[in-house]
Length: 190
Image (cartoon, rainbow, N blue to C red; front, side, top):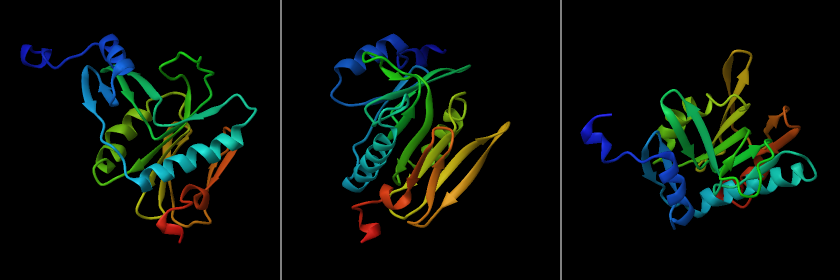
């Protein structure tokens, strides 16, 4: 690390301590902290629909779904990364005091014009490095459209769902998410 970059570097410990008391959420990328912007009502409706629908399906089972208040940690050769996905389906059995999902199996990001480039680029590559991840779903908030990246053998395949009657299948955890449920109460289904 160069001297000019050292002033912006924050340790993982410093980041996690700061997040415990911060009024705003921040993502952490190998020493650099980025403040997160707020969301629209439509964005939040979709994210809440995902959490509610999957939460109902997972009742009484080991796996659970978390909202955007729970971080996902990625360890890579470049350091540690912490993101706040819009919804995370986790099967790691994290304790009540854990600060992040332990074993994310499905991650959802609801895209906005400001985040789409990062969601389809940097986050896609970083999330795919998680050994437990089976599906990364990018949800368009302005159109009924979900890009689902699925782990397949030694690589990833992309599936594009564009109709309210389509189903996002998650066979590894025994859940199915109808797009109609995902987009419930949005102007896209009226």
